[in-house]
Image (tube, rainbow, N blue to C red):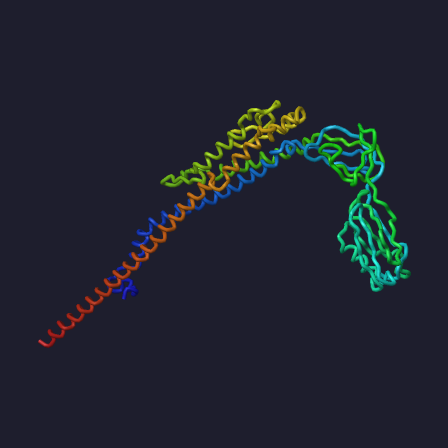
Length: 457
């Protein structure tokens, strides 16, 4: 019976409208809770984005914690047909002349006798093919009358002994002449190949001996020797790659001001991204066109944790670093200052001047020296503690999550109450309609009886 909705047929009342209005009044606390939940959800999303931007700033800062990464260096070669140069961490500024006498190379052994195909056999009977690389162990391949040229190459490669064996057609398609080629996979005399035993009919012999690279360097009377053509232990912080004989070739190392500026600019941009995001999410505006002059606030407008973090971060970035040797102790001395809106300004001209005048001091300001950390180290430590589990951001995020969970529980309970409230209203008004309908029916019956009695009289 409670599910029947008469809708005022008996009473003439618009009971559905009355019920809807009463339910709407009862729903107001739930609507307020829903609005509160939306606000908390927006704050939660904003805090997650804030954390992401803080982590991006940490990543940028970590790229300049090493002073050598702040002040990069570039290396040039006066003749790249002789050698190329690349500056790495710790490169020393200056010039060095190098003359390349010999290039490092690997050993090659080839067969003197060819075959008509790679599937041709290479021995008349049982035997072995033995070789070794440098002072290594003998590598033995068993052969017999069924061993093919390609099969021998495969077996040699299967030894994984520092050589690569292949079958090469030294002839033409019309007149094939397949030969075995064995090449060491590394350069230098310690990787030379020795043919110890050859029971094949190929006549395998070393046709190119391995050799070391030989070159002269400014300051050394005798040539230097290396087993490879690429090395980084001659000029500090510079990787050299020998290309051809010749020289003298001048290798120059200089401070890469453009790279240093770009490295620092990334840090400044990441910091400003954090500040600008917080500002955009913290705006408070008043609607003067409305009668109640309602106020709208961004999701982070009243987040004390974010405000505290940003304030502390400004202090860490702009504060002086004590204990540093050199002429710079604060970022403002190298062109990085805090503007009125809280973002960082970067005077690249001043930074260039500082790097040119004393690159070591600039590198130390960011990366520190010895036991004394620089600005980047301080920021790294602060942000690492901030973003770890149990840090301020994590605590704030958990608090918001707990509040949302509590609101969800209240909304669930409130909706149950509202459903019961509406059901009771509908049952009450339905019963009222039925009662009135019954009364009206009884009244009509009595009236009919009265009228009948009058006629009978």
